Length: 486
Ligand code: SF4
Image 1 (tube, rainbow, N blue to C red):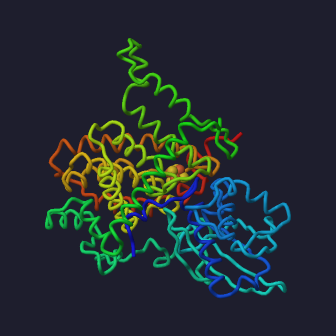
Image 2: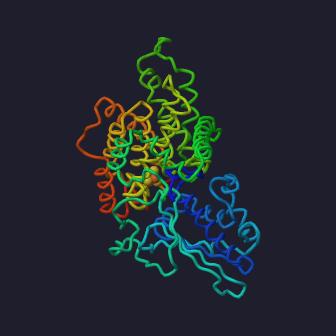
């Protein structure tokens, strides 16, 4: 059963689809082997990464994430420092601690395969796990997909494989989804919905806000105490992430591009000059430093730099776009006089509901639909959350969410060097401010508008389908080829 809080998973940087998902998949593989008593028979494990995972996996740390998952780690609790060193640690004696209980041979060059010429037809982020015994006999083989936002789906060893640039034959892709009413929430949820229009209609019919409706669904199967605790954890990790990003002592980000960490210096400057006009400073300084937008930029950069550095992160709804919702939520927290914890709950439940619509009816995976699915979805979610805490009606919230995605349609994914740094980090800051601007427009209207959120989401799905493969997290187009790596 789906929870809208699944849109906010505690994970590690730098990528939800290329780091978090693969670690979860590797963990699922060893868990199923353990359940089938296959761990003791295993002498070696081989992992093959396909499609986008093979093309940008090194920059995204997919190999390290998979190794950590094979050792039995999960994203919410893995030691991020251990993850950064795991490849070197295993190389010391060419072994890996399978499921944390059995040391097996693991020769990185032989057992971690990046197949850059093929992809699985079902999804661009496919991976194959194979376990062998001492004699080289196959003990187990599983295919898994990382389908965006840290979500995974199990496939079959004989799933169709195609060339890296081939279009999947009709009916073979996960993107070919069924239409119809949602049962994703389970039979006990009082208000299941599968579209924005259904969501707003339910709110109207039952005189509920979007957050109240989602709360009723969430607490139908789990205790209110548990749901509240989960939301509080998400908010705590978001706050810690902003704090770490603002105070990091690291000068630059890993990966070889030598991208500087900007948030710490920006924080120092903004914090010391927060009242620039009153102290008689120039208008130029006022433009640069005194506006709320400068702080929103800072919050987004802080989180995105933590993500790029492999730190603890909340996927929201992905890692690449993880700076947008915390930035807008911190804007609410620090700039609204009446901000409180209840408002944070309202914000996250509302944003989660909108994120669910993107995940269900289009995609939140850059490898599937480009950056519009990551940054566009996050912008829309953040706009909805802010409109909700400002007292927006369900129609105004839907309007804000629609504006948030409409102006991100067509956004491609072209990370330089396969790293979640350029253009990703600044893009989070831009989208956070776009979300706030979307709220300004929506809240000054009455909620009526021409393009619906459902139409914008469907447009995003179709645009993603038509987008050339090189603009979908392959680092084979756009900035990734026009910016020369030193
Ligand atoms: S360009 Fe967008 S979709 Fe691609 S890795 Fe960066 S944030 Fe994610």
